[in-house]
Amino acid sequence: MKFKFSPKYFLLTILIFLVEVLIATVLKDNFFIRAYLGDVIVVMLLYTFVKSFVTVNETKLIIGIFAFSCMVEFAQFFHVADKLGFQPGSLMYIVIGNSFSWIDILCYAIGCLILYVFIKFKPKNESD
Image (cartoon, rainbow, N blue to C red):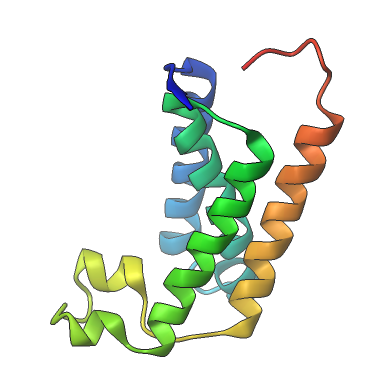
């Protein structure tokens, strides 16, 4: 892994972040999009964010993102945000979350699978 700034991935990160903000604010009443699509997309946000700053093995990165996502989800199972004293509504409380769901883990897996399919079928001459 080495540092290498990628404007392409950075712009993708900003775009995906804006989509996530749109889902959280404007589409908040659409249960399917907020509850499921947002979780599928968040792993893509993490992927493009990391790829914005470092060159790394893409498969290992996807596995790492899935593991990280699962750790955050299991932290919700153990109510870590409450135990750390974060107040409901605070940024860290929202980031960590407070309700465990196996469906969320499935959504993270689907997002990671989509990423994996994209990298495996990406043209070989396309550079990052």
